[in-house]
Image (tube, rainbow, N blue to C red; front, side, top):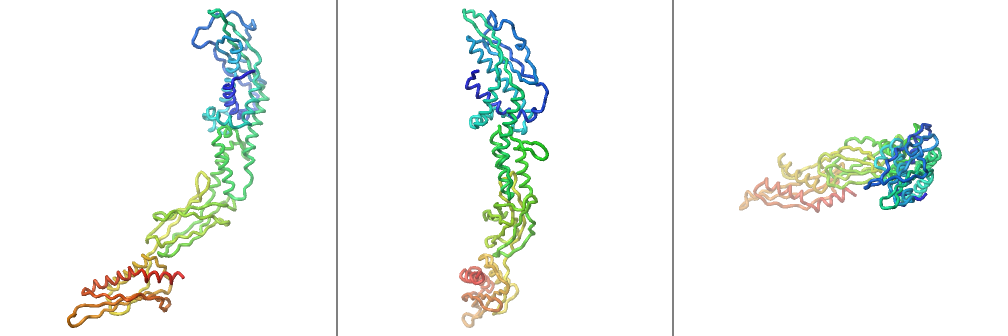
Length: 460
C-alpha cells in the first residue's frame, strides 16, 4: 500500500505522539467509536454522472463505520481523479489522516504529562526526523493500518473520459496497536529513568533531575511519553523531575549568622554553614556573596566537604556604617537557596595621649581629629596595647617677633609601652594658634610615610 513521502511524514508526526494512548486506554474494554467519514466530492467542479461502481453493490460500511472491540476502523474517501490508482492513494491518505486525528485527540486526554501536548502535533516534526527509534515505531504502526476493502464510483466525464472516487475501509488490530504503544512508552521511560541512579551528594542528584527536565522540555514527544512509577502511582517523568529538583533545592538552608560589628581595616571572618535533611552531603557548589551597598564585586566561595566555607570580608575599602550580606548557593535549580546577615563597620578609634604644651579639650579634639582621619584614610588595623602620643610644643617669640608662636609637633606609636616608630617633627610658625593647631592636624592626616610604616609594623 503506497504512501507518499509527505503523507508518511504527516502520519509519523502524530502517530508517534499517540504512543501515550495506552497509558490510560490499555486496560479498557469499551468499544471506541471511529472518526466521522468526510463527504465525497471534487473540489471546484460539479460531480459528473455516476455510470457504475466496483463492486456493483454498495457496501454498508461506506455510510456507517463498523464498530468492534478487537479492531479500530477508519474510512477514507478521495476526491474525483482521472485514474483509479490516484483515487485509491488519496483515499488511503484520507484514512491515514483520520487515524492521526483519532490518536491526536486521544493523546490530549490520556497523556501522562498533560501540559506537554498543547500544540504538540506541530512541534513533533523536527524530532521525528532526528529520532530513529521513534521513526521505526511510527512506521510499524502505519504498517498495521490495513486497507481491507475498496469501493469505487466511476463517473462519466462530459469530455468522454472517466472520473474515479474511491472509498477505503482501513483497520488496526486494537490489542496489537495498544501493546506496541505500551512497549514504546515503556522503552522511552526506561531510557530516561535509568539515569535516575542513586547519587551520593545533593548537587549530583539535582543535576540529574534538572538535566532530565531540560531534555524533556526540549523534546515534546518524549515529554508526553515518558512516565515514572512513583510509590504514589504513575506520573509524568517531566513533572516528577521538575518537582524533585524543586524539592532538593528547597531543602537546603543556611545556618543563622548573627549581626556583627568590626572596626574599619579589620577582616570579618565567619563560618557559613549549609544543610539539607535529604542528603548528608550537599556536594560541590559555589556560593555567591554580595555586600549590598558596597562597590566591591560579588565574591564566590567553594563549599567544603563538610558543607561549610569560611567567609572573609576585608573592610579596608568600606566606609564606616551598616551593611547587608546576601548569600546565594549557585545551583542548576528553579530557585537557588539564599540567606543573609548584617554587619557594621566601626570607625577606627585610637588611644591618644598628649605631651608638651598644655592644651584645652577643644584643642585636643582638633589634633586627635587629624589622627583619627588618618586611621580611616590608610585603613590602619590597630591592636590592643597601641597608643599614639601627640607631641605639641609651643614657643612664644620675644623682642621684634613678640606675639609670634612657633609650634613643633610629632607622632609616636607605642605598643605595650614600647616605642615602635616616630614621625619627623613638623615646625609651624603662625600667629593664629587655632590655625597652627589645624595645620598640625593636617600634618597627622597627610603623613603617608609615617602611616605606611605603622601599617607594616602592625601587620607583621
